[in-house]
Length: 387
Image 1 (cartoon, rainbow, N blue to C red):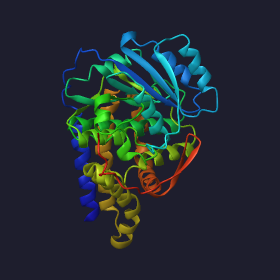
Image 2 (image 1 turned 90 degrees about the horizontal axis):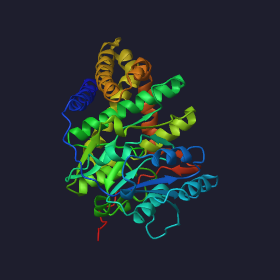
Image 3 (image 1 turned 180 degrees about the vertical axis):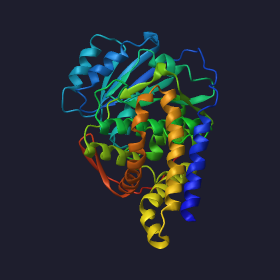
Image 4 (image 1 turned 90 degrees about the vertical axis):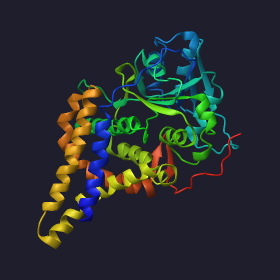
């Protein structure tokens, strides 16, 4: 009975997200804002040049946007590559991270904070140093900033529809596709849950209104999802999802299983934080974890007690059905129909994967940018006052 209830809740939530994907798009604006693209980079010599090549081809007026690359202690040729662009493009700047003992911000948040502090744009756009973006990225993202919107979440994907990716990498792509689909559905319901720093925009005024990253300064990650939660919780700004292909971007999936799980444990590390920051999100990820664990681990227990797999199989079927619906809709919207053939494998492997990352992301450790991080169950700061 417990398994049926938990699975039923999970099915109801996912169906609600799926239905919200059919909501009509709201009207965009033609207003032009000043924009600062802020990118934190650490040892990105293999990719930073490609990203900068994409950024200098933007269709947005040069006089209305600047590009700030924040060099977070790179020990490779990242700095010299950025310098070569700085010499040729007057709207590109490179900042070198200065250790800031006053704010107490963790590495990437400190880098982004310093970049934002030196920015002049009304709108901050962020992406990762290993991403590829379209020439229309800035123009399209800005169009979603109507007068009441404080943050815009853009779509990002792992890889492209062209071939050349392993099965393991394609499974990462469909997994991220399903996550982004759920994120869009939740935002359409005015209940934003998740975002990706690979494609994100927000008003500098909204960032300053919440005190920047200070409320979540001890978190290793979360410069995207926690920022979204803070703007939603502490301001009246609206949050929108940008479904236009003109602002889609992509990055490469991880090549090894070890790197993949380190990435996903980092993402999952903020799960317990949602208990204080966003109770609805916390309940959703808890229900998702329990549904997967209940079916995957509970099936043999149920068979031992009742000599039948009937209930676990029915729950598994219901779970897979609704996950297919939301992934199918996302694949159409995001032009990744090619990924649907990997859905059956992903749907089965997802269960042990969710269980493992849920536990290890909460209590384990992970590596990021050559630094080892031990997860800590820190408390959300409710006493922070914004000047």
